[in-house]
Length: 243
Image (cartoon, rainbow, N blue to C red):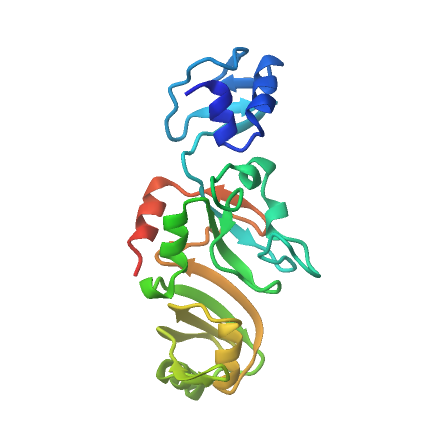
């Protein structure tokens, strides 16, 4: 693949802009400064390169996680709060995706006041696999309740509660008391404000909400609010198999 094409696929602008980066000596591949935009590069997953001194890796498709902080919306056109996309570097937001929205997309949404594990990708099949309720990918939330958690709350959530937009009971896949005011709640679908509405229907209310696991992938303790990192191949494979 030509170097300018490689940079284009990774979101560094048009081919002309990418060629200019190379010609100005701002691009190095595996530590070697390149000045020929048409140089053929043997691309591979994880190929290290730098652009204007910033380290990058080549990825045919982007798969990443973020520790979403409070006060951000999972929208590219936010309203009252800033967008989580502003926490990502420009190239990830600009990766070409023919026929679709440009850049990586958040998989599902967390409310502006909800924190925790958020996935992004530009792989349409992967996004569908993770987001579709048909695949029953479990998502685990740590719920801080306004009132002490009682066994009756847990029982109601496991047996099913009725929300005002659906007469059919909605059940938690699992529900455990973590602390006097805390629940670990597992869901396999994603209705609007589902956790908050379910807890309210069970007779309590949500004071704080944090998603800490999707499938078997847990939010790393080392990843601080607002930070992101690439998923490794094993994590992507494990998520694909989640059900």
